[in-house]
Amino acid sequence: MKFSNIRLLVNDFDKCFTFYNDILGLECTWGKLGDNFASFNIGNPSGLALFKAELMSIAINNTDAKKNEILQDKVAIIVQVDSVNETYNSLQNKGVKFLTEPKDMTAWGIRVAHFRDPENNLIELYSELPKEKWDNHLIEDERNFQKSK
Image (cartoon, rainbow, N blue to C red):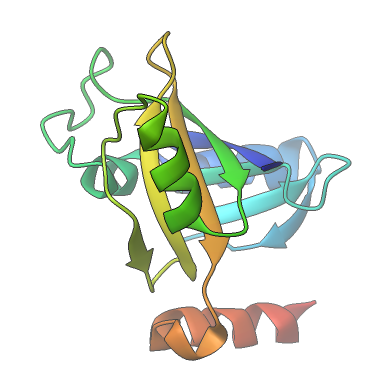
């Protein structure tokens, strides 16, 4: 396993994007205003990420949260693994109870599985999908972002 980033799960993406990009002056390494996801360089090129909380709630089957400060996750620890399926099986054999089974998130460009630690913190395991499995919107976003650099 390899630590990837801390993802802040936000309700007002554009306000948070503006804060980290314009006010704090962090280098944006992916994303823009109006998107669902952005990452910033904090000594690690994508060490801090923003993601719409509503979309994470959908991904982990927690749609009842709907901006409820008590139910909605605010932070997710993101861990990159070589194989989501193998890590999922290994951790499941050790008693980890997963919120989601491994699944391709083509709009995100990754395969994921989610679980919680003993203190209820949300953890995402991911591995990158080959670009041919990305959805068209993500491919277009990447092209546009690369052009704007």
